[in-house]
Length: 96
View 1: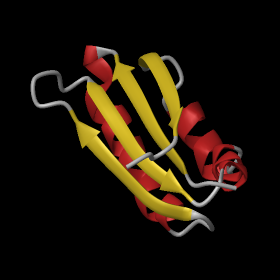
View 2: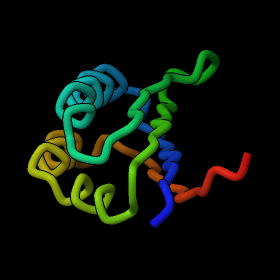
View 3: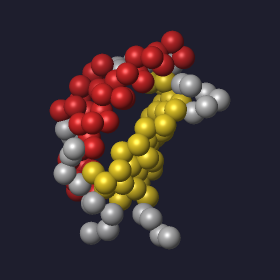
């Protein structure tokens, strides 16, 4: 199976930026240690601090799915419930 690139965009409510940022940062060391994680980088938009983007590379979609069902993701979802305005995920294949 081919490697998987994920681009996840998280738009948070303006009054929840600090909370969500802190919760997202908690995911970094845990996720980077997961089986199949090749890259897991968090970015914050320079002109819109309420917009965060994860750029991720995984060995396979199955291993990414394991990540998506991990307890630390569930804890993040619970901690940020109601704070995220919009969340989109793009599953992509590197072609060059």
